[in-house]
Each structure stands twice: as C-alpha cells, then as structure tokens.
Length: 176
Image (cartoon, rainbow, N blue to C red; front, top):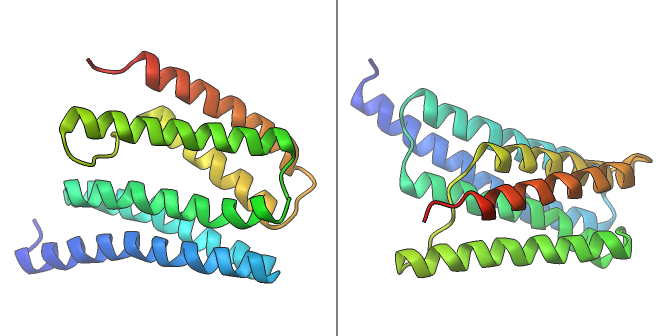
C-alpha cells in the first residue's frame, strides 16, 4: 500500500507526463516544419513513450481518473496532429493518404460530437482495445514519415486498413 502523499505525487506525475505529450507535439510540429526531421523523430518517440507510460502507471497504481482519461485522449490527438499537420502541408502524403486523414479526422469529430450530445457536455469516447491498436499503427506510420522511410507508404495503407476496421468496430458495437 502506498502512502497518500506518494499517491498524490504519482497522480500529478502521471498527469504531467500526459501534459508533456501536448508540449512535445508542438515541438514536433515546429521541428518538422523547420526541416529538423531526426530531432522531430526523437521527440515524437519520447511523446509515444509518455503515452505508454502514463496509462500504465495510472492503472498500476489505481490512479485512473476522468480528467486523466480526457487529458490522455487530447494529448494523443495533439501528438498525432503535431506530426500530421506539417507532413500534410509539406506534401509528404499522397492524395489518397490526405483523403484518408481527412476522413479519419471527420470520424473523430463525429465521435466527439456524438458523445457530447449524448452526455450534454464535451466528452471524448472511451478507449477500446481496437482503438489502442489503431493508435500504435498511426504512431509507427507517422514515425516512418518523419524519418522519410522507404516503407512509409506501405505502412500508411496498412494503417488505413486498421483504421477502417477500428471505425467499423466502433460504430457497429456502440452501446445504446
């Protein structure tokens, strides 16, 4: 059993990791636009590591909170779009990938809107196992684009396949 003081420290530490991911997203965005791709890649990986760590620590020490879950979802979006936005505007993506990104973004927006209307306040949908798998495919693919890997397009199409499965799972298995 951990003391209340240590528990409080861990709670703030876990949420600080999540907030750090938001800050790192802006750094990634700036580095990619500035042409510092290797540095952006390293910072992006640190951001991904905070995603792995914050949730694991929160569950391990029973520190899961509504604010933490909401912050985590927002931080994930910030990290993803911190890489997507500059790559999109620097024309790193094919037209098909750009269309896929726009569709995925609209699906996220529809999902948030649906939950907001249902709960009468701004809320993000809960995580499902398929969503977590989807996130790591997206992270991996963005990392490949950041470092300009020759496998980036193959991984992009595989990622969109996973996103499609996730979307079908999400919209067909909703609790009424």
